Length: 155
Image (cartoon, rainbow, N blue to C red):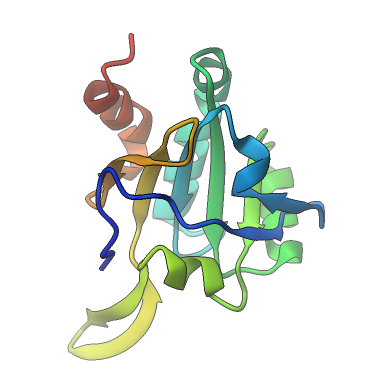
């Protein structure tokens, strides 16, 4: 699980998005960022979470937020996923798991008694000056926007 806490400086990162463009946290300085980490493209929970954020993307932009998704999938996988659901935001391919590790979301998990390394679904809300404002480690994939807006007190 993550060792980052509210009030900490968000780790800088850079990675390729679904279009092969280099995206960095620094490029969004001056905007709030909803940075969500998810396990795998085109799986039920990850699709529900991503579609929920995308369905509300215009609202997020109007409130000064940018949305960025990160998973260990490839640029090609992200492109198919983003094209299929017409996502308006960046999906970063972290195939080397550097961003996942920097944010503490690449961790040991367990399923049916077997232990394995994987992505712990987590969302970080980062302020305009790069400070972590909120951390969501129990994500409601189908209603993630509602979950975020309640805690962030966004109308």
